[in-house]
Length: 286
Ligand SMILES: [Zn+2]
Image 1: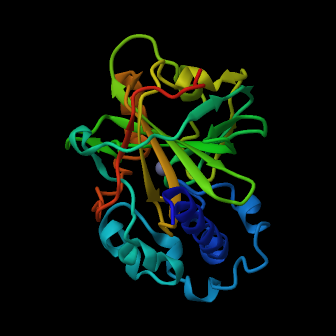
Image 2: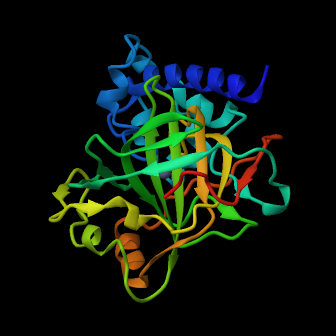
């Protein structure tokens, strides 16, 4: 079986698993998951495993419900410890190779609503922005942040990481990761940071429409690999693209975020023989 057919099938299975996990937990809407209401509608089985997920709602990044316990918290969360293609991973340029997918980004200026969901600040994105991976469009659902970064490059992380979460017509997920580096000066995040909701459950509207392309680096070289959600239920079949070039965020902005969420990165997961593909540029990328 060729790689793309195999990964497609795997992604499809994972999408079903993801949809069936939606009913698990009221507070698990954070992190890499797409909008639950959209995913739940993709599967008639949504929520049927909810009876097993009673404690799963309380996952966190530290302590008794931290990442090393996620897999023991019931229901679909078991994937967090049994999965063989988990994210994040360390990205090592020396080990990368293979044939990269062609990725084109088509993001639009959008009005954004931010939500503090207790795990991250998540921006819901109206329909109309997408990425295309080898000809398949994936619509942007939401983006959110982690501090410090989840992926590392040769063991080195950055101050924060931005995840754009997309979904195709079959419910399969693709995440575009952007590493954010602290640097004083101008920041594309200023309009968002003015509106950061500072308490769990709070939402805020960003005052002006934001061109999402401004949150991306100019160079589109990337690492690509098959991974998972980095938050419970750690569903696999996620197409990961992590851009090589960083985007800057100011130290003040990182500190402001750190006051809300001191630590929100899942530890690095084993590669288990997965292929890490490197792309210098993406044909068709803006
Ligand atoms: Zn994420």
